[in-house]
Length: 142
Image (cartoon, rainbow, N blue to C red):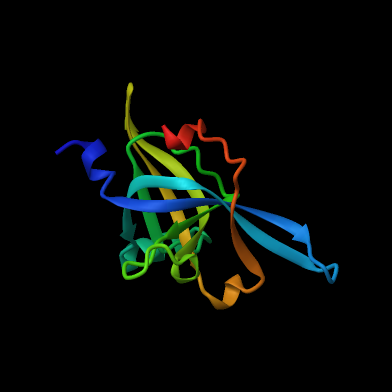
């Protein structure tokens, strides 16, 4: 089984988080939907969580890609709800904490994106919108 086939079993939604001034002059956060991406989603084991904690990082999920997704810490990742995949309010949202490539000399094998789960309580005041101006030629969509 190839890395490409292993890294394409799940579909995630990619968002860009921006801050705007709300009607009461407070900060309002908006997640702009950029598109759906294929990858492999895995929760971290307890020992992996402890390893990242020792480095001062709170990470609990990994996302594996067969090519460079171009994802940065300004992005958020959403995993659609299994029962109602079109309902964005039931989506699990993750803040991107970092990304790196797993490779051997002269060969890039896969890219790993680290994510931290964002609880529903921490999402209050954060709206999800579809960005009609999203650039469909971005590197993560290829």
